[in-house]
Length: 336
Image 1 (cartoon, one colour):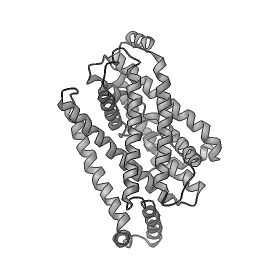
Image 2 (image 1 turned 180 degrees about the vertical axis):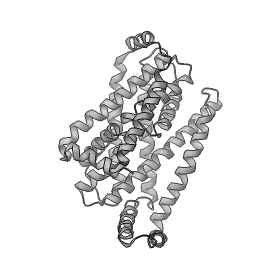
Image 3 (image 1 turned 120 degrees about the vertical axis):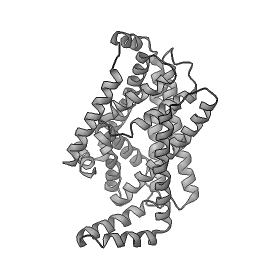
């Protein structure tokens, strides 16, 4: 029932953002914008999208390494299929597919694998906040005028992300203290449920083993910066496909990326349809880009990234040896 509710909620929210994206659009102007785009710039954008997937899979391997060293091929397979599931399932239910796959292919427990995804996402959000800080510094030089809501959203994200990272580090370093604290809470629950939660807690704490190692944590932070820098370059490469955007600086590409990233943290339809387009268009509006060109750009970059993720996922499905129905069931059943 929860999975169905998530699907309905995500689809409705996506539909609202699709309506907001296309509201007031002159479709003849939109068609002209598509015809005038220089599609040669899709080539570097596709190359960069594949590179992002490679770096993501390698970074995940670094987080998993204290538990077990996983070969790069298995990491790339699980990452590609996992991100395909994220794109096809609403409200990010596909996030549970990667942990499921890596737990299935190794002796890493599911709880530990889930913890590595949490660590990855925390570093993603912190990296985006660092990029936002750089963009805000650019805005002081009058290159970019950021709306107030972006700063407010970033403060909310920081208020959630920084304490979460500190809590995870504390839990990893002071494991015994963490276990004792949770044991007191679990004693209030029925015995069978308490036993299950205790096993899950120990498994989850296993997945945080990278955090006490400051050198590996710093390396992880660097890989996160590389990942998001490459994603920003995809945005920048596609600026060149439009005469109205070719003059925009690299800082503008990261501004659009940040606003879009904030937008897709909301519950979404499959593939982030609607959210992605609306917030991408919103970001380009800061640079006085015409609505038709902004929407064309949003459709083009979303379609490109979605297609690359789906193609990579389909390529690697035979190597994970999990039927598609079971794969998507794992994501739906694990979703909260």
